[in-house]
Amino acid sequence: MAQKIKKGDRVQILSGRDKGRQGEVIRVMPAEDRALVQGVNLVKRHQKATGIGNPGGITEKEAPIHLSNLAMIDPKSGKPTRVGFKVLEDGKKVRVARSSGEVLDA
Image (cartoon, rainbow, N blue to C red):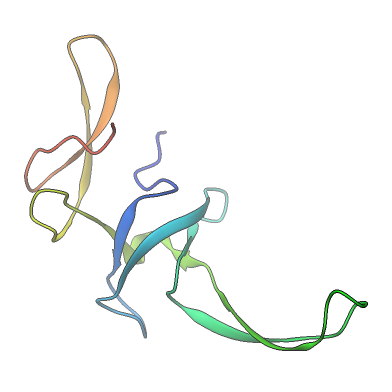
């Protein structure tokens, strides 16, 4: 089945500690139904020094978020929307915003 959320999409967080925040999808992990969103769901990791170029310390990085907690941003209205699929006249299958009918794929 086609993915409703892809890398590079603008999404909004629907639940959790970062509810309401928006960001761009960095990576999608379809096997786990999770995605990484830039600047959202940040966690601190204690990193051990592993050589001259890699000093140790506490770093912040994004943690994966379940896809059910993400909603696409409608390019027309700027609000979160559900995603549907539509087959165009040339036979190409594209993603569309349910609220406005706007095509999400370029």
